[in-house]
Length: 606
Ligand code: M6R
Image 1: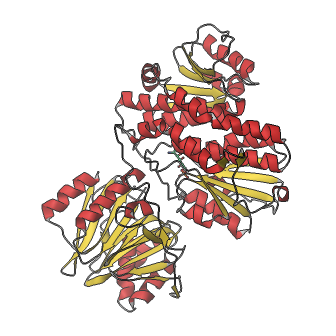
Image 2: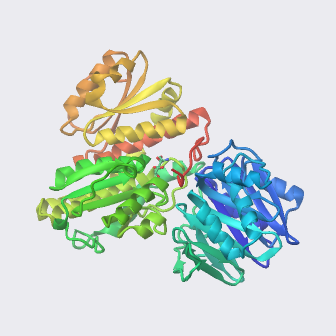
């Protein structure tokens, strides 16, 4: 998704803007650009494609400057092209923008009547001309207040002004924006990661606010222009040097890291001496709520679906799960005795944030399960449970999914024990099982010899299906999502028992099908469903777990057996072969594994 960087300094800024844009590449983008002031005049360089191409052009035109803004764009209005790349400039100002201006067509008409000529098809260009128009009769502050009022939709903005070497303006509504502090220079960034190579001192703009950033000071204002003091956070430096190391792809590294990220998370939440769960910041009594609503998007949504099974099994609460983009527009009957849990790796997903915001407006109890603890969702929820898996760069979420499930499982176990739904013996045995999870994931990672060849078959198929029952059903959805996003192969996740109600018609000779059949209460039924697809010509990859009894079924194409573990923890293990399957399928196709086409790591638009 789009990314913003701005630097004001008394030193040259161009190369640092380019470096920071590289840090934002993980978000996914299709074009890039930069604008600086040179002797007070706005100079811009833009290109379609990668930041490397932008850097070449910057060198060609020898673009310099001590104040500048840069942007990576993920197209929303207008195709990816040099013209549509940001910044968008008028004679007077240059603007970078994340988000969508919903009333851009009306504003464009208004500005065209006044003689403004538009070069791009973007919604952003209206902002440059609107600021120019208001500046004619208003002070800087009045202009910003009036322009922000005129804009409908979501935005994070960075603006520089002709002849004004002393400040950059930042503003936000809906989309996040951070300010960083350095020695005799300050920064603007769409996320803290872009700024981390320059500073660990960060403030965040509150929704609807704007700021004026000088070299030596930063002023924050609310939407009426009233000055504010924003808190300065000292960010942890541990993620600063997150690199690929010996791996060719971040995704590969992130899959392999899972045993250690699981360990890190367990160390944060489990006191190994007392064999107890440490969630000390839980501000409510569990008996105060009767239901839990879990909300997320994509992979995070799938982790919520797994948690529904755990919570229903181990607590007396009513559990429901919602896709954030649906939740925010439904006529929800908010209940005081509900806990609303928002799951998000980035903590910046626009739909999930909007769903949280809706709950806050209705004074609900909210909990965020995030990876990025400085994110908007983490900052705005009543309580935060981090997943502690470190920076995730690959657009396809892997270690964060296991981290989300892990925190949800730990929370479920805590609630279950606090509710007295399980006794101390069961509670402690659950914790003991959790302590062996990391080791079992390590063993599962070694089971990949066959997956390289299996991946080739999936990559070259017309389509495939992923089937499971119970906990394995959301994992089937997740496996299918991974294959779709990485190998661009149509894949459907389905409850195994639902096949005969329609999708069985899709099965034809040679179609690859993943069947998730761990040795749980559903095992026999799932194996029957597997036989039904084999009988119709499917090539079945069976993922199950080790057992003294052999799987009784003929004509299974391939079989992978993960460790025998407590049933409830099997979702962690059967996910890993599916992550690898998608990885090898994308490798076979030669696709960009860390940045699949059309996708972004942090989805900050609706
Ligand atoms: O940052 P979030 O967890 O809120 O992101 C939600 C989804 O956009 C994300 O999980 C997406 O589905 C992944 N690309 C899947 O691999």
